Length: 52
Image 1 (cartoon, helix red, strand yellow):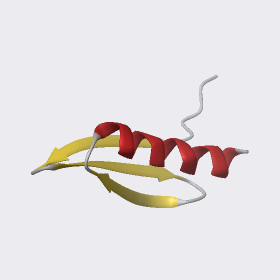
Image 2: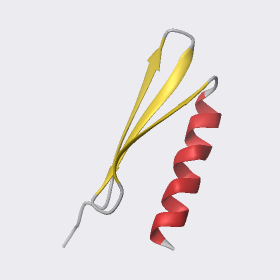
Image 3: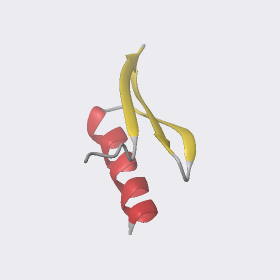
């Protein structure tokens, strides 16, 4: 059986990237950065802290 633990959306707005992360425990959070890698790293750090 599969269970959804998070939902992540990535967008590009103007000259920056945006990630919207939603989890049951943390709710909805938004991260912005100049590069996709910056935003991805922020999301990975947040998920690592929440699920460890």
